[in-house]
Length: 304
Image (tube, rainbow, N blue to C red; front, side, top):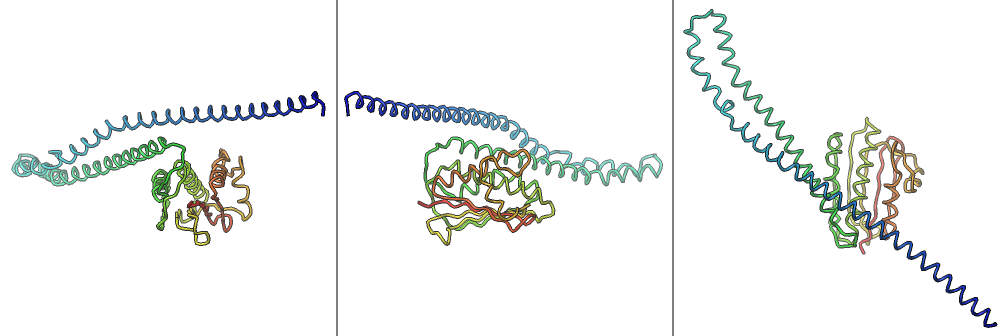
């Protein structure tokens, strides 16, 4: 090999290395920009949640004070006593007998009617207070998970399942859906906590939206978690519903990017689930006995 040929080969190798390094640098730059963007969006979201939480505080105080006033209202407590002198005086008044009967009837029913109205108002205000407390708890959960780092850490799968259900509780309960949980004793695992939460929230959302499409069903979602009996180094989480179901074989497309059976769907949710679970050595499967017969999704998490 001549010196010229050797230099040419060395130059080509060096050029190839530079090109490879340039591609790696571009990828690293893109990843850094993406992480910075996601970090900025997360910070903005935390700020919005914080502001909403602050806005809730004065109304929570106002509702608490309103409940106290309603409960201790003098009219509610002493109306019968206040009307007693009138009850005693009306029989001797110089008015027609028919008018006396009407006034005495009003005096008789007014305290009970007022008490009933107060009780209903108190119940309505308590419902508003409960909704506020639920909103506050959801905000607190989102803020806690938004502060999580993307690093893997030891987490309680049981707690994350409970948090996911709590986040979707309002959407599930307002549809009249019964949700049942059966969580066996399962170990802590090392995983990205926020991503596991996102997967569970997504599957629960898919479940109640599927039930919306099957209005004659008994409206039920079941969540189970246990050690996989066939693979004892895996945790198995099953989310089943009584929704629209699907034709056997169509589940193969569920996890493809862009596939969606919902109007306005992004086709990204299940793809994200499958991609993340596969990247950590886990997996996800879907099963249905057919259209109108519900569906179940099972995710597998490696214990180690």
